[in-house]
Amino acid sequence: MKAETKQFDLLFYGNRPGAAKRFFYLCSLAFVSFWLSSCTKTEEKQEEAKAFMLSDTMMSRITLDTVKTETVKNELTLVGKVVPDENQIIKIFPLVGGNVEDVNVELGDNVKKGQKLATIRSGEVADFERQLIQAQSDLLIAQKNLSSTEDLYESKLVPERDAITARQMVDKAQAEVNRVKEIFSIYGLGKSTNYTVKSPINGFIISKNVNRGMQLRSDNSESLFTVGQIADVWVMANVNESDIPRIKLGMSANVQTISFPDEIFKGKVDKIYNVLDPESKAMQIRIQLQNVGFKLKPEMHATVNLNFDEGGQMNAIPSQSIIFDRSKNWVMVFHSRSKIETRPVEVYRTLANRAYIKSGLKDGERVISKNQLLVYDALND
Image (tube, rainbow, N blue to C red; front, side, top):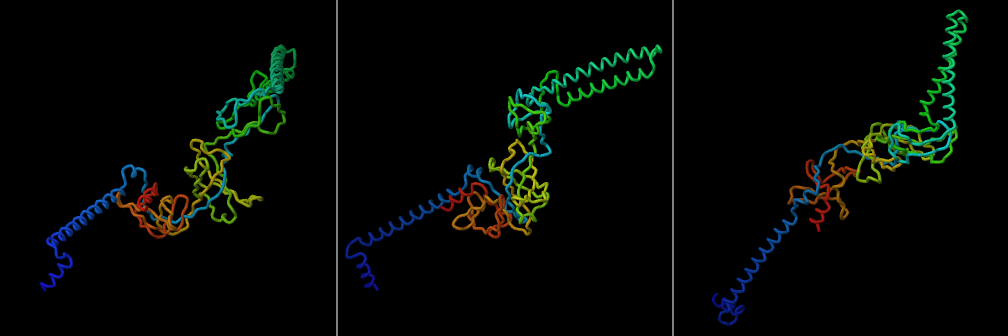
C-alpha cells in the first residue's frame, strides 16, 4: 500500500521537493475561486430579482382588474351615423317675399330663442302696414258714426235700426284691426317695412339656405334655416337581414366615432323601424344618446356595438389585458410587486371591452390590463 501511494505521489508531484505543498495551494486557490464565483452568481440573481420588482412609478401606470365569472355575451357591430332628434328640429320658412338685407348667423352657430337670424325688406310688410292704418282709420270713423247715431236715437230722430247698424260697423272695423294686428304678431312685424327672421327655439343652425342680397318669392317652399337642439341626438344604424332576429328594444348599445376613438357613448335601442330599405335591403334602428359637451355632431359616422346575452358562465377580463405573442394568448397575472406571472390562456371570445377565458385563469385572480406589454417585455426578453 505504501508503495502504491509513493507511485501516486511520483505520478502527480514528481520527484521534486515541495510539490505536495504546491498542489495543495492550487487546490485551495481553485476552491476560493469557485466560492467567489458562487457568491457573484448569487448577487447577480438577487440583482436580477430586484430588476423585475415594479417601482412606485410603474405601479401608478398599470391597472389591475379582477377575474370575474360573468354571463357570456355576444356582440353585433353595426354601421350608422349621428342625426339630430327630429322632435327638436324646426325649419324656418319665409312668411313674406322680398329682398334679403342681412344674414346674422352662419352654419353651426349656437342661437337663442328670439335671436335675429336675417332681415328681409318686403313690399308685403309695407302692405300690411297700410292695412293696419286703414283698419284703424275705419274703426275711428265707425266709432264716431256710432256716437252720433246713438245721440240721434236718444233724441228719437233716427230709428233703433240705424243705431244697431252703427254698432255692427264698429264691431266689423274692430275685427279688421284685430286681424291685422294678429298678422303683425305672427310675423313679428314692427313699425318698419322690414321682416325680421327670428329663431323660435334655442339650438344650433344645422341648415342654412339664404344669403345676403337673395330675392325671395312669397310662395318660396324652401326653408331659410333649420334650427335643432342637439343636447340629445340619435344614431341611425343599419341592420342586415340575417341579424334582424337578434335585435330587441332596450338593448344596450356602445357607440364610437372616428373623432373620439377612445370614448364610448352609451345608449339603448329605443326604436326599431320594421321596414327594409328597398335599395340597401337593411332595416334601421335608432339609438338615443345624451350629447354631453356637444361632442356628437350631425352626420358623423358611428360604429355601434350591441351586446346580448348568449348564455352560460365564464371567466371574463378586459379585452385589452390579452397579449398575443408566439401564436398564443398571454396575460400578466399579478401576485405581488415582485411576483408577476406570464400565463398562457385560451380565449373563448373577444368583444370590444371584454374577453371570455375558456381556461388558464381562476375567479378572483388579478391581471394587468394597462401597460401590461411593458411588464411582459421586461420579464420575457
